[in-house]
Image (cartoon, rainbow, N blue to C red; front, side, top):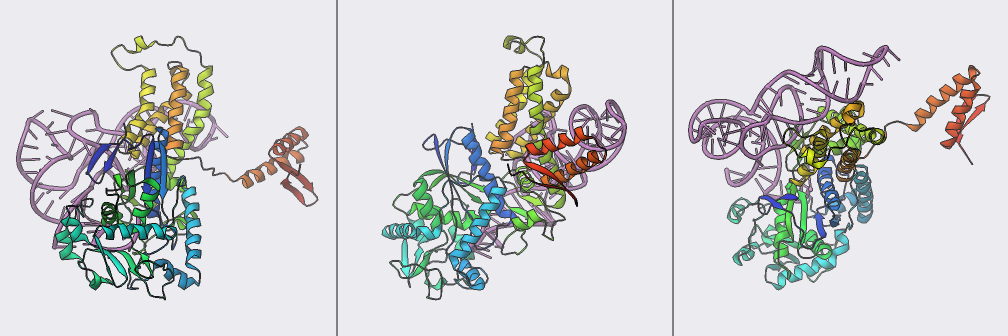
Length: 509
RNA sequence: GGUAACGUGACCGAGCGGCUAGGUAGAGGUCUGCAAAACCUCCUACGGCGGUUCGAAUCCGCCCGUUACCUCCA
């Protein structure tokens, strides 16, 4: 039974979909105005594992991850200007061109990290109509008001109706009142400081603006997720994910918008939040400017790290910590992660050897279940089965990937013993070995999404083969020469002896 | 200032009141032409001070330290 920690209730709850076997999952996606950084990768990886696991369990998951391409304000004094528009202006590009460029790069990075693409990847700019419709619903219920072509959500009135703004993040509105900063643009239009924008009026110089019942403008920062999750998953769906930093105000506002719509409710039943990545003990963020982009990371061009690390090393690194714990990035930690990842991959290769070995092994007698049920220490057979079941137990416990990994390493150790000790292999049934191997593979590859990342360069291996070829030739060992030739031929490579030396080319046959 | 977390061995990280993960690094051993891998053994820690308890890394209080959110952010 899968349990997940629900931020709404602050405890682990058994997960049961609203409409089995369907599961609706929404994850707050990227703002596509520059390259994603390492911290941005944690959420997608965590929720990719969740999606994969739910599918493994037999659920039919609809995974929605939005692309935010409108309406996010810059925080550095450029009042009200759209982040995308700012980048676009700087680069003399169409805003949509900027969005497209970074969207494509984001998808590439996610694919490299082994994250399955979402089933639906809605863009905020493509859902202006839905967002306007949602605002009208909220206004229709009297929980939003217009001021100078902008529309604000009326938080005090919302609370007066018994709805509870702050329930997700544990905020108390009175405290927010006292502490809200007043220097933000448009504050004077608000009736109350904690009211938030549903629609912002935009002057003609804004590159991204749309017509609305309240004039030209753009949607508020929190609106798209409410509008799009409802459109594609329904007013009540199963899981909403995002980073801890989005809990307040973003998700709080989302819930308020959902509650204030004509289809009231919290939206998702489960709200899940992944913790932050820190570098040298500090959160990595765009605004702090201390971020390492994914591409810099893969290429090793960041000054903060001594070398390049592969996408799978990063994925393993994240999975080694529980998603609700903070994790700190360092060279040492990454090197340890990379080695651990490779060990797991070697385990995958070991299985190819172990399975035939196990089938060929002659066993004295297969222990019957009644014999294994005797008291005392569990039989080797039972031990193997237990080891293979452990990773799933830990995944069920709020997606505890570090413990699942630990269990995989325990299982791998057993596999190694079986592979090198015939006597040990003879003590377990071929069936148990097959099942344990299947479990290992399923958890590593299908659920954790760790795939083999070939490190060897085909080009260099080819050069090596050519070296042997030349050597054989100079020794006039023509049987060996022919052997190398034909072996390469089956790989689609032909060797060409030219006057200037040995070369290779793709076979044109 | 308000609100949440967190502080675990050389490093990264699990842990949710007794059975005290796992990875990496280090030491010794088995194996081995060399090397690697693998396996075995070792290194056994919980910020400080009190309290609760038969028993605390785990619960409570205080203190110290770190981080996050309160403003766009995964």
